[in-house]
Length: 79
Image 1 (cartoon, rainbow, N blue to C red):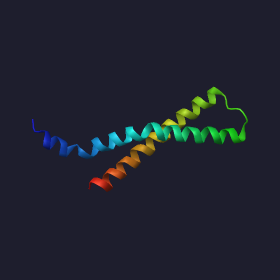
Image 2 (image 1 turned 90 degrees about the horizontal axis):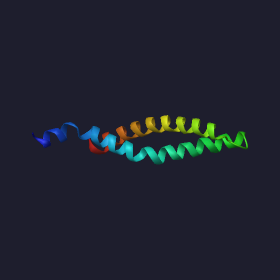
Image 3 (image 1 turned 60 degrees about the vertical axis):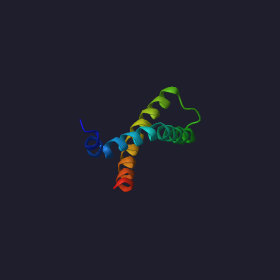
Image 4 (image 1 turned 180 degrees about the vertical axis):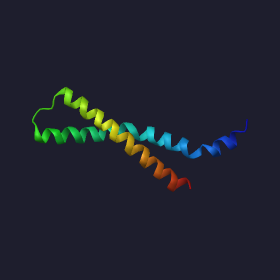
């Protein structure tokens, strides 16, 4: 098996996945904190159930952002 041809064929997707995974956790935490602070401005207390729902929203948003940003970054840097 020729690993060079395998690497050339899957070079970009490998880097997109690696960069997306590396960015996912800090981006999710940042977005979640921003969501909670925004909610705290309108309400004084944010319940644990609301925080859990905001964490789900932050997860979905960060997945989309990380994949799109990683794809654009890899295309700009490696091509």
